[in-house]
Image (cartoon, rainbow, N blue to C red; front, side, top):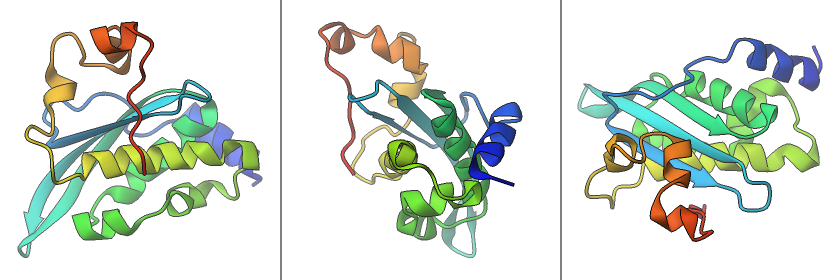
Length: 157
C-alpha cells in the first residue's frame, strides 16, 4: 500500500477525532505558513508508579495528511509512559503512513508540537484552553481576541 493509499485510508476512518471533555492535558500548535492547526488531548492513568497515556484524541484544521498523522499518533500513544511519549519525534508519529512527501513533513511536526505542548510541565492549568466557553474548539480559539488581531498561537518545538 502506497503512502497516499495509507493517508486516504486514515482519512476515510480517522481514529480518536474530537474533543476529550475529561482530558488531563491539552496541547495546540499552528503553522502560520499554511494555516493548519492541531490540538491534542491526553488522558493519563497510573501504572506501577508511572504516568501512562490512557487515551488521546485530536482536532485538526488542516490538510488530510495532518489529520492522518494525528489519527495514527493518537493510536500510537495509548499505553506509552509520558517519558516514552516525550522521546517520540515527528518521523516516529508519521512512520505508519510511510515516508511523507517533503511538502507534507510539517504535518508530522505539527502533531509532534501539539503532543509536546500537551506534555509541558510548566502549565498551571493544562486543560484551561480546551474548557473555556469561548475557546473550546480550534475554531473558537481563532475567534478569541488575540486571534482577531491576526496573531496565531504557535508552539515552537
